[in-house]
Length: 216
Image (tube, rainbow, N blue to C red; front, side, top):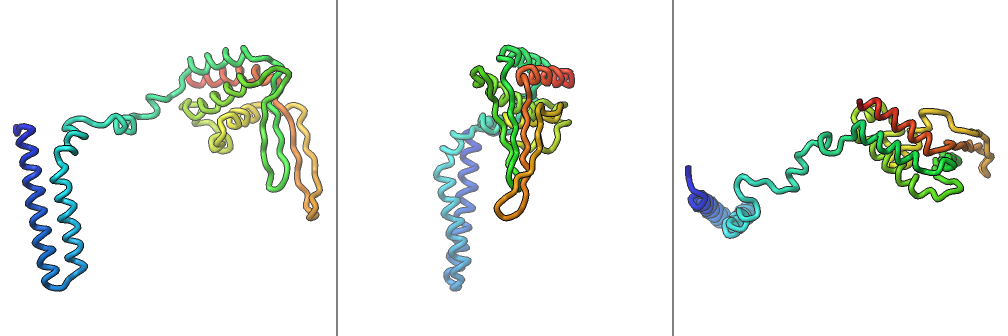
């Protein structure tokens, strides 16, 4: 087997030969007044010259047999590194149970064609519950069996907190749900819808346990 230094020598030699051929082709084209073809051959020759000149540096950046870490990360299967399992859902259920029970997820939709809005509110500080809801929404897409059963609306939702609240909304009806008609200035009528998920931490914990059962 050829040594690394021999491989480098033959690589540079081949590049030099190709470079000379390109220069000769460029010269012939220019002599025949084929300016466009000559320019192309000249550019190719310059490119091979630069590659040959910088070849040792290129080899130093990408040694033989080594793959950059970024390439390895791209080739690694996301299902193996990011998959959510039963234990992840059970732990998240415990985290939700530690949140104040008076928190709720409030839903509204109004206007044409209709804009949905969610917010988590209550008498207690809702930041922890909001963060957990965002985490849960992210986990929905990384939980193989759960993700396979998601509706198009839930799966396509860009905001992870909204994704989780939509997921909960589909599991059970909203509390105190109302649907009204609002007349617009142009004579059209827009729907106004509102409701909430009462005791959001408890509803979320129950949903997490259900997701854990699917990943068992």
